[in-house]
Every structure is written in structure tokens, then in C-alpha cells.
Amino acid sequence: MITILLQKILTSLTSLLTGLVTSLTAIDEALDVPVIVKTVTGAVCNFTANIARRCYSVKTTILYSGGGGSASDPVAIVGADSVTVYQSGSDTSQYLATVVEFDDTCYGGEIDFITGKLTLTHFFLESTWGAGINATDLGDNVRKLYKFFTPGMCKYPPTTARPQKCNVAPYVSNFNQDSNHFYCNSNEAILFMPEDTADDTVVQFVAELEEPVIIDLYPINITPEIGENNIWSDSGNDTTVIYYEKLEE
Image (cartoon, rainbow, N blue to C red; front, top):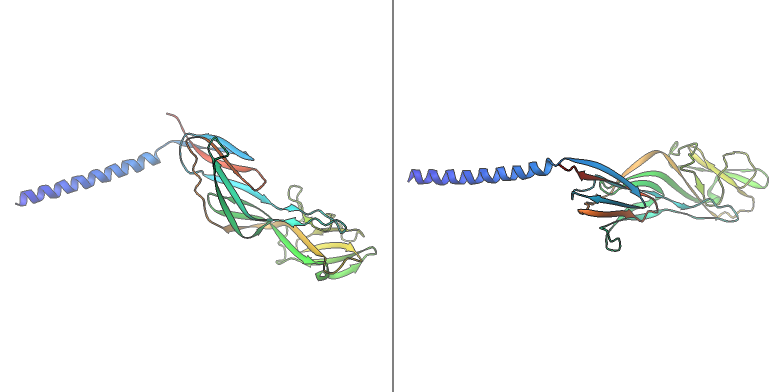
């Protein structure tokens, strides 16, 4: 009786150990695939994958549109409330679309769909001409100031790649020039408008942050198909995909 019981116990243990070894072998095989990472950038990222492993990174830049207007010809500054990433095989008309909603309108930044992190690089300020402070009459134009939310938050001077924009004035970095213009320093926006400008005229500014701000959204699993792949977004800017490629033995 004892012998039969011991045999059953040994059989059960053998079965358990066999299953454990099989599981460990499967895990080891999954982790032991020699791979390299490759990068592709473009309006549509086209590449061929030989392993179905989630992309290391899928990033795209989001940037405002508009701005650069004048007192007589305003051009509104427009940001993005969401961005959509698309994934397809060789036929780009058959795609999977995933929409990422932002908590607040984004006027400049970079999103990594894989990690779900949105790095904000720009800020936006909207006010009215009447709300400007420290008005100074220069002759044909009046100079007013608009304080930023946090002192030192604006990158100054701006870079050519990331210029400042206003909806009712062109950029000119001059504190006393009697013309319709604007610029932002580290702490405030300085706007020059004609004397007869109505107080309810909407004024908008967008500029680069001195320090980027990271917002946690939600990650997306983007796994290439074996064969031809296409990945892109509706941001209006290039997308960069970093994916894995299995090394051939």
C-alpha cells in the first residue's frame, strides 16, 4: 500500500517537474533570441520585420499651427487635442487606428506611443488686449506686458527650429520699436499694438518651455507583423519607429 502511494507521489512530482522544465525552456527560448534594434523615420515608416516583438519605441512630434499674423490680419494659433497612430501591413488602406486623447490641448511636444509618455515642449497663453499691463504709448503703437504663469518658464532667446508665435503680431525682439510686433522673454510676453486696438481683441502666444514637462498617458502595444509593415500618425510630422530584428543564425 505504501509502495503504491509512493509511486503515485513520484509520478505526480515527475509530471510537475516536466511541466516546469518545459515552461522554463519556453521562457528561455523566448528570451534567448538574438536581436538588434533598427530605426526608421518618415511620414510613413515602412519596414520589414522578421520577428513579432513589440516595438521598442514609436514617437511623433506634435506642433501648433497658425500664428504669425498681425493686428490687421490675425492668424489663430491652433493646437492638438489628440493624435492617432496607424498600423498596417503592406496594404495601407487596411489599418488599425488608435486615438490618444490629451488631457489639455498640446501646442508642442513629442509622444512615445509605446511608453505612453507625452513630453511637452511648448506652452500657450491666451488673453485680451485690454488685460495687458504696464501700458506704454510709443506713438503709433502701445506696448503691453503679459506675465507668464511661472517666472522663467519660457526659453529665451528662441531657436530658429522652435520660434515664438503670436496671432496678432510678427516676432521682433525690440523693447522700444514703435511698430506692431511682439516677443517673449523668460518671464513675460511683450506686445506692441496700434493705439486704436479694441480691448476685447484676443491675443495668443506660443513659445518653447525652458524645461520640458512629461505627462503620463497610456501605453499602446504596437507589434509588427512578420513581413512588410507601415506605421504613421496624423500629427503632420514625421514618425520614428525603433523595432527589433532577429539576427539570422
